[in-house]
Image (cartoon, rainbow, N blue to C red):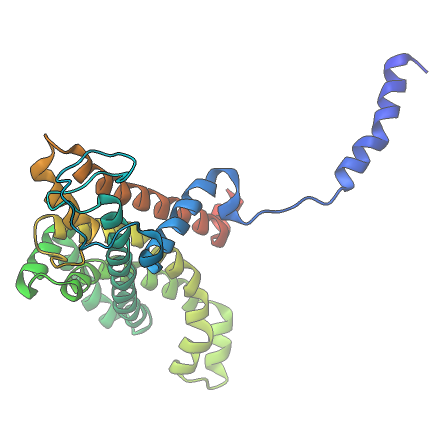
Length: 296
């Protein structure tokens, strides 16, 4: 046997042992491309749930250090009242995450019901609801949110309603498409042939097949909902009280951008990091739940 062939035969058992060795499969969000956005989301959630334990100061604590730059005591500097910007950003996570999650729930629930009725209710119902949604979607999201928020008044609840209503058409479209795809399948016809009611068919067969897509839409929608809500706060139509969110902090900091860049920069970075992380995690969830994405 020649020398190269002998070397190959000698390495073969080692390769088989390497292939047979059990490998640790990490969750999707812990894999290299998603570890950073997953970690950012966990940090944001911790800040939103436990700001009292994480923030170095209370959001109402004022010092004599007015517009002090970042340093050892105040890592993100101070604002025009001498408050610690890092603490304000940490407390602001609660308002922003609460607003984004509740807006997604409102939009997903209303849009899901409309899409379900449109897809399962017959041609006439589908035609009417889809034309109404076309009119709804003809108005840009941010403009429609401004109109609703201005009519209701600035508050956290009204911001959730405004952002949630803006996102209703996109959830309705996705739900309708899923219902139309499922209702034509054989097992639906079989269930109907044995006398199952429409309510039973919807609860037992339609909804379970639409949950994954709606969950993906909800994950992707958190980032955009927070962005729209922050935009409303930025122009004074969102959360405007002693519990500021990131958009309101950004709005306050813009007046001092030339003399205290840190005041507006850190809330803006928090919004950017959260939106990008939510979108990346939503894409990963879609790739995992969508068979077509996995096949590609």
